[in-house]
Image 1: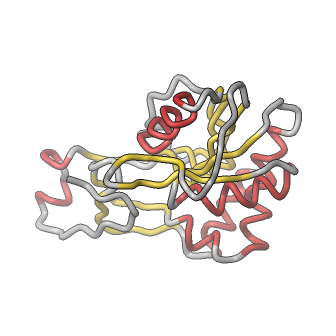
Image 2: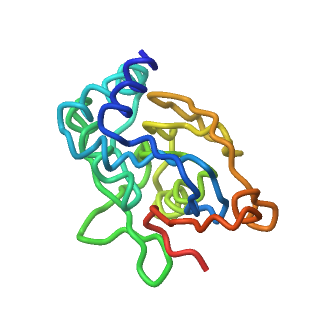
Length: 188
């Protein structure tokens, strides 16, 4: 099924090559812009069907997607799994829950992402969920870049090992190639 997800990413032109500044602050010569896939509801549904199948027997109450990348993923997974889906967002640089969304004490929560690289947004969302009394049971994503150090179960549609570099040792910077920053997080 990973081959089908890879083809969907290619068809939607979500697999990019160049020099990218990732939301983690690292650099890479490849980038997966899942928004390009998610703009097509039929392709998004097909891709996310693979991770939903892995989660059908899991017991959880709520799906939470960190803005921006996790919002559409949360919605589509909630639709397929019959679960409510909400999202966290940054306010003054802090991940928070707004818009009247609630996490009740003891609720079992699944976090969704488009791409997991370091897991920083997911960990910020874990903190919000746990502060409200929720229990995180896992993280689901379209692409797992296999570079996170998360100690939370991670379920993905596809695993892709994409090389990334610290800015100080980036070979693309050394070649004088300018980077672009396609992600949504402001990097300081």
